[in-house]
Image 1 (spheres, one colour):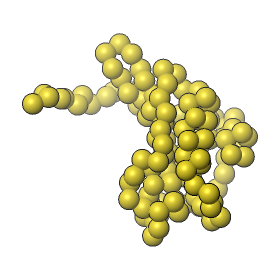
Image 2 (tube, rainbow, N blue to C red; image 1 turned 180 degrees about the horizontal axis):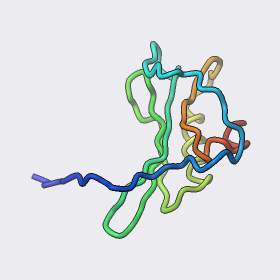
Image 3 (cartoon, one colour; image 1 turned 135 degrees about the horizontal axis):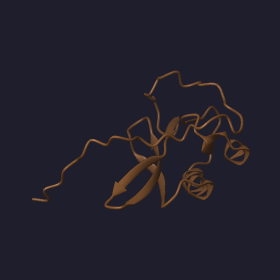
Image 4 (cartoon, rainbow, N blue to C red; image 1 turned 30 degrees about the vertical axis):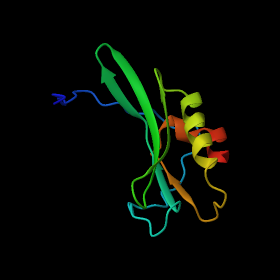
Length: 117
């Protein structure tokens, strides 16, 4: 047995600082189910504390079945991590008409380069 334990964390990572770019409308409106694959994806940056180190995970999941489409990790929150994650994900799909990629309004997702991609 691995004897893994989860500690309740006291401080949560929040990527929303203020508006640093454009905040877009929430078109998903908490409808977190998709009828087809590659119709709705969601992403978020999560902080993982490991001993005395912080690691940041940025995955994209398909809201159809919860499959992980792509992910990236980094020792700091930065646009390189977000770009790598999204480039890997969009390299897997060809048709994006009507497609939704849902994210919170964190500073990463407000950047012009991210929105354009």
